[in-house]
Amino acid sequence: MIFLVIGLVLVILVLLGIIMHDRKQRRGIEKQLAFVREQFSLAPIKSVGGDKRYRELIQKINQLLFDYRDMQQKYQNADQHNRMMIASIAHDFRTPLTSISGYVQLLKEEPEGEDAEKYYQVILQRIHSLSLLIEDFYAISILQSNEYPVRLQPVQPLLILQEELALYYAELQAHFANLSIGIEENRVECRSDPMILKRIIQNLIKNALIHGTQMFSVQAALVDQGIQVIIRNGIDPLKPFDITRIFDRMYIGDQSRHQRSTGLGLAIVRELCRLLRISIQAEIVEEQLSLCLVIPENEAKVT
View: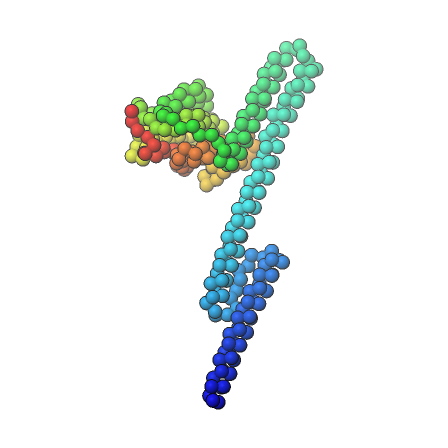
């Protein structure tokens, strides 16, 4: 009988020990969580014992804290991007508006003067610049909200490329000392959105005209992966250029505000390519910027 009592006492003592240990671990976790909540700390929770159950619980809590920290960092980055965009919008709109205001005042003072027509043309140019700015900011906003309309139909990308190059050929010829265009004659057809394809090509050409120097080349052909288009232009080696940020919103290589550039052109290109499942890569080789687009093989065929 005495052995039974001793056994029961031992069992009770063991259970009390387990309960006390369990309570200690729970209080330790609760105390650390209270600190995280009150101090807005993202420090990981530390284990206060060797219990496997609590180790697993602490691992899950810490994973939530890590996920929250990543989400907070992404939010801060997005907030910083938005602040930069607002500042850039204000700057980009202020410049042509100030110019328009100045020339309107000149027209008021000299409505019939010999320079009136010149003032009028400058005002029209600045209004056109404002329209382009509004279009870029509107495009990037609806692209990133996944509301950009996509209308797929049979198109010939190489033909669209030729047409757009023809429209800009005079500007390209006047801007670049060396101009080279090589496009295969294959009638390659795929299902895509012709208006989006045109905008992609237009933005790439405009980017070259704004930032490129010396040379411009376009090579397009049907390769194993699909339709490949490579656009190259020379760059100024004296200006800082971060190739890893070339598709970022608002990034301009020399960090100066260019009157013809919002810094959104290539960011819009990347988003438009994403809509059409077109891959785009950028690299710098021997003071030349190379942008390579590939329409996947399963999206393209020769007609």
